[in-house]
Length: 375
Image (cartoon, rainbow, N blue to C red; front, top):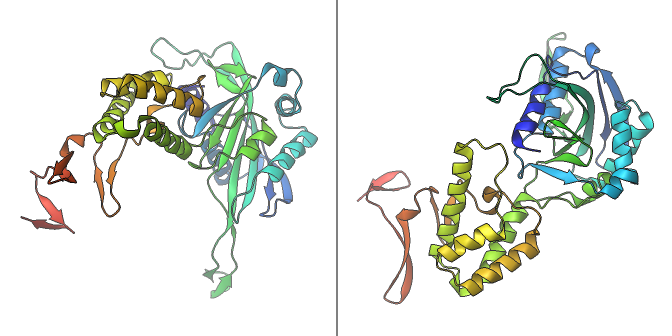
């Protein structure tokens, strides 16, 4: 899927735009026990509760592709006869009305997913979308198209215990202590099945949402999809850093790393400004070319390509912003941290003076110390 397709489905999740008739779900306590199940008719819910459910479902497929959102692909063997894909298809074909299928999914989630000191609220909703034509200018046409997309969304939200409060009871005209409530947070995980590829159903894929930068939730993905989990965003950055340092060794200079950061950032900015719908990705080849243009030897650049493919694979590239922080540049020594706007790397240079290395900061525009302008 691409960002535009995910955004098109998120726009469906509004009270006036979707065809959702029921909200199914369950509450799983912090011990992994299913405490309660519910099936609420949307028509009987107050508008405020409808909006809250839809907001949580919408957040369960939010973010951008390659970061919070990832494609999960099924093999042909899984589609033809696996238990995990069969369950997802049963949920879809029954429009989530198969209670046994819902219980199987709840059981997989309760057995495979634990969040520290929290319970889980699992929400499910089925929708059928009459996919409209998209004009040459990219706008959606009101007269509709000939494609119907049937899918369901799942959002998994943490449920935490709030603080006890001392509140005023208007009926009794008195203050009373109220115990702690259970509070539902924004989704930690979510998914959509089937995927909405080229604005049509693709039963060979699902869309996964993962809020965490550091946790890939491998057990959950294995239990529900039995596919290889996408590498967590934070792990991608750490892995890229290790590959760069280990493969370049003594050629991993300040100039080289600055140039890699600059080139990756410029690629991301140009891609965004060009409004290209397909996500931008880079692989070992593209980063290797940046290294060679930065003066890295062919031997070290080749070693980088090998290590990169070992770490990330050869099938898919990664968004440039996943490899290095595009919004912040940080120089760090054991005792000093210097943060610089990513487009002003020219303000920092490294010099050796009297046999000692220094980071030099250009300071023509004035200097402040704890808010005090100093000379």
